[in-house]
Image (cartoon, rainbow, N blue to C red; front, side, top):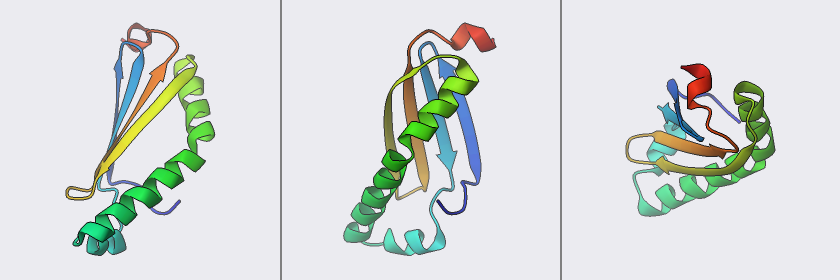
Length: 98
């Protein structure tokens, strides 16, 4: 799917996994983000890429946490090049990793 982000952090919050990715925009996307149409295009493409990888990502979450992923929510900021992904999972996992 291209180069990875410059920084990734994951947080366990009760029955959620919050993933924060910094520096996700490619140089070409940074140029596109200078126009409103470009920002919309970036969001559309990134949403599609993540949706296509959803099954794999949910399996990774399950493998790491031992809990089944129930839903995935995401947004990307084209102004700062940051993306957040939130997975809700089938049980409280926060205490498992404390």
